[in-house]
Image (cartoon, rainbow, N blue to C red; front, side):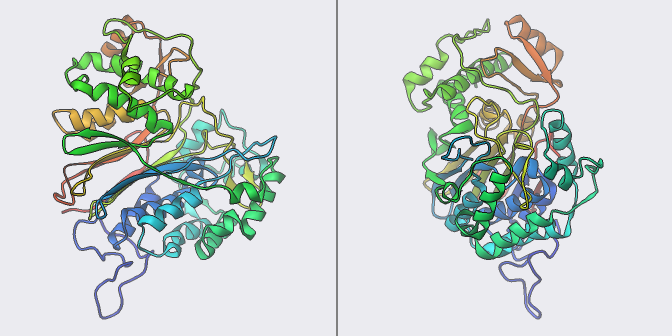
Length: 506
């Protein structure tokens, strides 16, 4: 694929240098994102010799402009990283936090500091260069993508947009249309400050002071200390041995739910040995129990006793709901977005971002262009979920997936179907009709594409069915022989999204 010149041209009289498009000759890896322009920006970074972290940072900030309802810098997220060069796997968590004071309405944003930490630990290209495309998109405008339009239309019935958001997005004039030029001049000024001064200005400088004042003007209670005190966390992932490799999940949020599903299903090849017709029912009941354990604060994916407890009353012949249950709300619209990147050295980054609901709060901090996230809600089914498989001895990477929306159990099943399945087909695993249940309400949500025969089977087992057009989004890649050893991979964009997978030929 040919890329533009957003990152500069090769020096006259010589070949391209690192930071120039086309610097990498041949295979440069791949990047998948829920918004196509963000994916193209990330792909260009890989082509110019940037690491997977560089690509993820550039793609994220571009998406914060082109798809703010899912990835505004007012939100937060989590990234799972495998550095195949230094042979290290870790998680960076920067989920939105509740401000310290009373009467709070909006979360303290984590994305800026989270992305900066990712870049500081794993990036090589200049921070300012990585943010320049996002600033250009905001200042000069960008054509609204189909991805943006679909998320907006899905959120519109359930989100009340304030006057600032209505003005910027053109809600009152019917301006949300594919191809329409959208300029976000105030957000462009914010991006310029972040690009030239770094994240410190947002969390403790002049920009942070202005942002906190704008949040208060919008009815929130944020202070500069709330911003100063926000710290992303570097965490050890949850790991499971898989031969000579490890399967890793983030240790909180959706990763913890997915890890429980993996631990229970992969143990003793339980899922692999199961009849195909029984797998959906099994994952539904297992996923519901995992949701409930996470919401109750009792989840432990590494404890054999805790995993055995999840499996105790799961029956192959009937659906058993547990009581009492903690209510875990299922969003009616897509919430969040994800980016997965891998470079030609096998360095891998899988990030999932959240606005704590579709289009966040629907309110923009006046004068900043930043869409705000509501307070975190532990009873929400839509939570960031990331997973990967790697060899932590010789530094190979095989699989990575990032889910947004109600996808913790879905990510767990995609990993099972891709890695333990006989056909090693992530494309099929991602495309398969989805189902999930949080356990309370005791409803099985299924996609409308699920075959009638499977629906009949689930109803006969006792599931109460509610159909939806789509459930969440999952992006990822699968390199069955391991990168960088063998450059044969599947780069998979969820067909439910209008995103893009960018990669190069061998």
